[in-house]
Length: 152
Image (cartoon, rainbow, N blue to C red; front, side, top):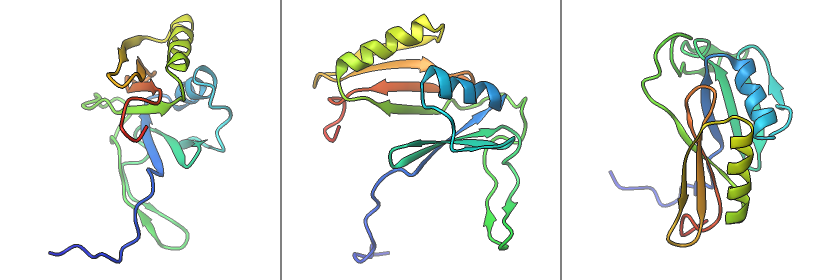
């Protein structure tokens, strides 16, 4: 099938979704430890943080596996693990951006001071840096500076 050339270009990733075993613990980690502030959306099912053009959504495990029918009748397909105690078969990786390599060093030191497990540090060939850490649910977080990709 030939690609349509008249389709609008996709501009960016709009949402990143992570699944939490205990949503309040994860909200506290992202609000306080990573200093994302108060979520703009917060209930027993989910929390949302605004990061520029991207939204970080934290979902309570076990509350999203069935389809959600909206009042309009529209359906959001079910996603995520079906239960809180299901073993995590896949660790999600995500990266948060800072401008300078020195900013990465500062965040790595701050995470360690705060008792967060730093799982790796990398200096990339183009001069960028990354620090990797484990969030409360075992997801692999990264804080990265410019100089890790040709476009960043």
